[in-house]
Image (cartoon, rainbow, N blue to C red; front, side):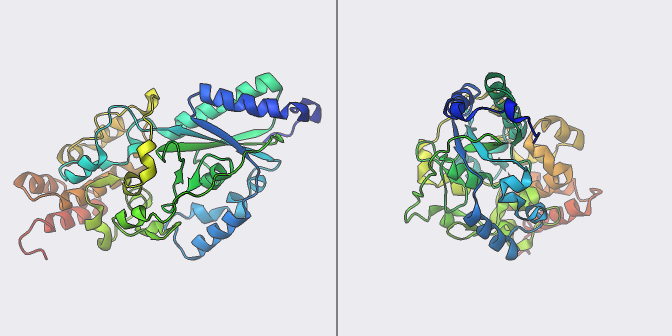
Length: 363
């Protein structure tokens, strides 16, 4: 964050106008909601430290690397006074039924957020445009834009800014539009009026805890990432533990089960954002076809997509597990055998496991 001459800063007497303008421009730029909060996250810091102490972040060393900078915005970006938190809906029009895709084990299920363009790029560019527009009207100010790109407690900040509450599955929920949305932030040295925080409306509902295939929601508001399918298929670098392979089913990139059963998502709205339009029919692609991609095809068809971050090796690892969980057929076994000599031992080990699921002697 740049240090500005005080004479260049937004004047206190126009702070209310600046906040209202920011919210109006956010809607113009495609965000569904923008709220403003302070930097206070003391209770959330305690929750974070307890989670890290229990090792529930697994191999995500970056969660602990920055210490309390994640829960102290003014420590991460000195001079931060206010945080602008914005959300953008992402469910694309024409998307296939998720429950149907999960029950058809011939298909590869990809988390709904990853079917279009990488949200990091989309939100970061829009937030930058928002900051530029504010500066053009009110004068230069210090700021930094984030979209899941730095140690930021984005859900806690969004809750405090009135964008929704953190549900028992630890995702943010808005009573008027559910939870299918992305979050992004602008840390700023502007002293802006804050919005009231959201209150919890989960009540006695435990549908997400029951629905989680691997029981990763170990208690209300507590997720053990080491059990989470999103972690296992995206964050985990090595072999997926045997205990979770059957439960993964046909989920090859992420998992949406806790959101699919959430009653608040009956209010979810489809996004008209062109960047989130489904690419390459990935909402209903067969596992056999996806497993046949060579690395060049993988890189081409995931260009500009969040999926590319896992790389080709883990892509094959994940699909091998899904093929091990699908109905046995000569076609499935043939496809798996084509990868038995793959250069990666990680891939070969998961292929061997998958083939074993289709042999008569397998328990």
